[in-house]
Amino acid sequence: MALGFFGLAILLCLTLDSDYTSSTVYAASSEGVEITYGSVIKLMHEKTKFRLHSHDVPYGSGSGQQSVTGFPNVNDANSYWIVRPETTTSYKPGDNIKSGTIIRLQHMKTRRWLHSHVHASPISNNLEVSCFGDDGNSDTGDYWRLEIEGSGKTWRQDQRIRLHHVDTSGYLHSHDKKYNRIAGGQQEVCGVREKRADNVWLAAEGIYLPTSESKASM
Image (cartoon, rainbow, N blue to C red):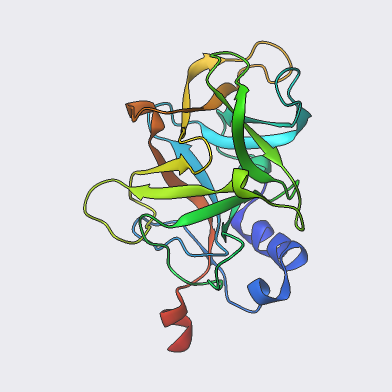
């Protein structure tokens, strides 16, 4: 395993700010746990089972920003994302996340934000999805609205979700179109403006913070 739950917990203590590390973290190894702000998760594409992934490799076209792909292997540290609120809100680590809420996803290893814009994606010419910015540099291109499929109101690990980009109205999307060279074997992640079966994701492996209510009762 490239980064086990224990190793990830240690890395959290070293990389997250003090507000986040003041809370106990737990391995999200069973279905139904709540995904809260501060959680570090992998997002699995429902149809192909690839994980949302990034690495410090720029696109060779479009924006030239850090590339985002779908990764076939479960055990890779470059597939972890920190769930953050949008910049103008007062949400705290451990707060739950309701359907319709705007969130940001920060790539844990490079500290850049999951981002989209109107540049064309490399393979399918849909909307490019990239990573951009850093801890102190984020804009509305990093804003994604959480849409929970079905009757659930707060985000849990076993729920099917879509992420709807605020600026472009594109849904976070992937498909079985794969790169041949730099990211060989990895598949394209892009944005599309229609709801499709390929827009659906699930929270998979990771470390999550307990809900604020749970911490208050400890």
